[in-house]
Length: 256
Image 1 (cartoon, rainbow, N blue to C red):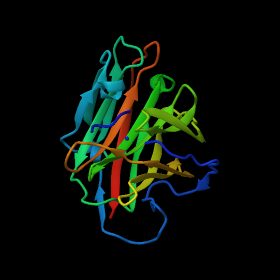
Image 2: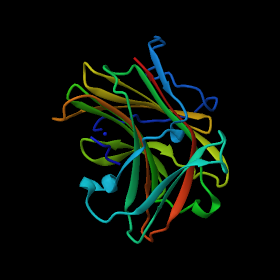
Image 3: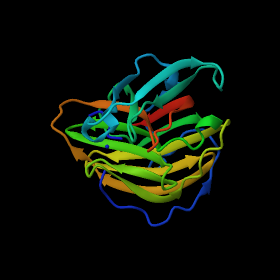
Image 4: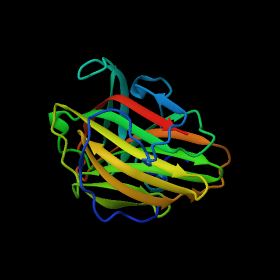
């Protein structure tokens, strides 16, 4: 995953899980300071989703997968309108990247959460090379990338180092998603505009919260103006094996 305009830094040494209720909003940096909150709900239902196709490939080079996003799915669904993301084609290790552009915040965020429910059909249970998701902010000449990857090869959760263009393990094992059921994912982040730093605070999977406390310097960019997106990506394996997943109740919460 490369974002559309995401990280190098220090990794926490341990990631002991904590119990947490599924759903709800994370507290970001845990400061307890309330700010102005913006909630974008059921994003999978919104019109205006974009794709840059193979932009998840390094430099958007190489073959392009066959991919699609189908909205308004009633089964399986929790809200009555989930979205199906599909990928296929003859090109091993190719991928598909979809993103939604939000109004750009004018400042860094003291707390940011990205959450959704994921359904993996039985036929797709072991098909992915990886499933990835991210938020990304461009602000005052810097890119703040907040990306996670469910790595099916190493069975690990990883974060993306946008500056070095590589994934980094964080010590959280990936328990592959049980098929034909819904799973809740919630990622907590924040950033600091004065030090130009990105923070991955925690990842919650099916109610189990893993504090990660990873920081990376933001990446300088010559692209002017502000931007803010959330994204979803599917990666094909060596075979390659076509597959589909469903996403519902997608929500992004920003706190100034």
